[in-house]
Length: 421
Image 1: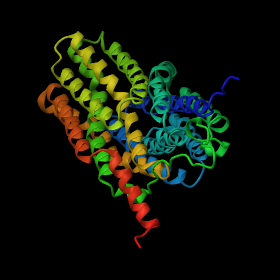
Image 2: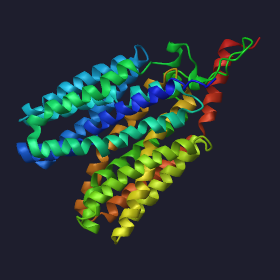
Image 3: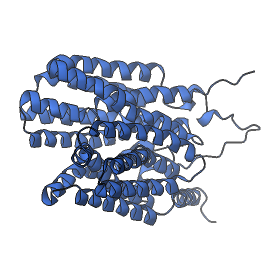
């Protein structure tokens, strides 16, 4: 008799579609919207860029709200309500003419993205898988890159040829269709809700319980050195990464010519997809912390290559190296936290860690821009980003391996349950 496919893999596919939609119409679409607002509504570039920073702040706050909610209610409710509010925000794009409206849109849209995007969906996946968690998350998170490859170019084409006002309702409808049906009809909050266990493993016979994953409360996790180390390292590494991405098109265009700049962005996205898929398989054999440190080092190397690139070939090499690390670095943050603390309070733990990295993400592009203006080139800005990545490596090394946290937490729990006689 053929073995049935574990339902968790259907959840992986559905969440992959959701992340493709939200990233394509959200994160990657920000630069398209910025250009459109500057062109159609005559907003100054600096003002529109400030609104984009509001989006990242809103996203971080939204993630914290989502983390609090999904520990109390079905994560699907949070995702669906966020999708409806996001769609309403997109539908209102045609009515934005004043700076206050522009900033309000980005703040609300960012809040909705944070509430309905990565955190609730990755939290759901973390509950469905344990042994194959890295593979499941790597496959689903490929949607984050596919959104930029498939959906954002279509959005850019429609806005370019038909304008914001005419395109806005179609963007809103696309968001609803890409998120709501998959979440409502395919995704389930946990395997236990369907009488299953993580990974589809058979329950142990003879009344023997399956070994429990670490179960750490939010308070315990927040006080640990490992949580602080992951959060601080991602503050610097993600700030360097997002800052480098924001300026990469201009870097390649300046150093290699306008003809290869679009190719560089396509290679960046393609390398990110390939890196995520390969990373999921590698993590079945390599410890998560070791793999993460390797990724940080790869990003550092790529930034140095880009800083000193003097020809087209070297520029494209740096872009590919950067892209291969880029997607996996984002994926590793929830994996490190889930491995260390389990899934009991994972939503809040991940959201809190992610919030700490938000100032780095929001400030990275601005800091690279300031450095470019001061030095007249991209060598020093990208070397500064490389230094930030190196600092992230040092911090994660000092945090120690996650297993120490798990053992400590279990020991404390055992002490509370079985006090010495």
